[in-house]
Image 1 (tube, helix red, strand yellow):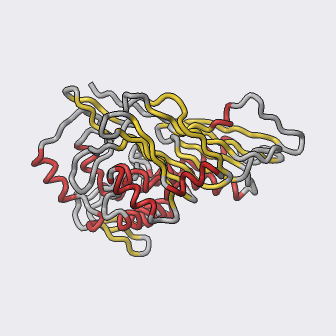
Image 2 (cartoon, rainbow, N blue to C red):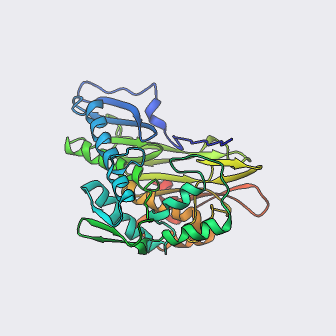
Image 3 (cartoon, one colour):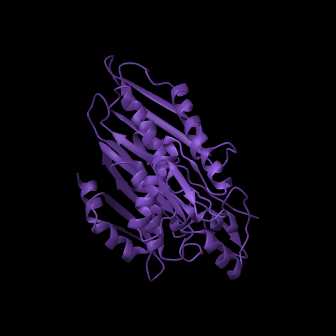
Length: 339
């Protein structure tokens, strides 16, 4: 039997459920919650009136599903996957593909949206199973997995083999968070938190206090697949935080826990000391894309990668050589905590 545990709120919006929040007449605090993309969303914003409603948010999420969801037969992503040679993209899919190709190059192929065939064969696609594929099957499918097999020209995405299919699970929710944040800003809302499936983007402060938004990061117990208490609190007034973790989706087969994080270069699930990586960036699409690749790198390479960049910061939870849970943060993330 498959046992899949998805911690939807890996990163908890501490202030969201505060019973002490109060705003005078000139400031109102609005909360919008719902379900989307197989998970939940929560939006908090401060304004003079409820100019953005749940209906507004849900309409935008439906639009995003029509482009990016593998679970909508009519979606643009499914049109591409079912095509022989490629399709013309809509604006949403185009934006995600452009970012995906950049991150693929930056991570030397560790982030690769053509991972779909491998995700399916390991039982984490639309068809869930506890399947353990044999080496020959993985080797065969790897012939269909590489961003070198797709090409973007203007708004047309082509594939070099009909078997090439894309999976945006590692970036689409981050992009969706950015789209919802941009929607709020179109309505001149500049103090908000947008959370979708644990991916978060923040701007501004609580009103009227001017206090930064508080974001909590979950901490694991000695069982790396069990997260309970809050380990760190980060205060933000801008930017995005996302997390990738080996515990978020997994299934068990013959007593073996198999994570959903598949290495596109080997065809096998992640197998290193990292339990989770939390990434901070200016926008959620960036944080979301890099957190998966960092998980696959392992601690030493991931830390080195992050320290060389100015656009991301990271917080790592891992099992050390003695088997106990440890934490480590990049210098930029430490600064973020101290601000």
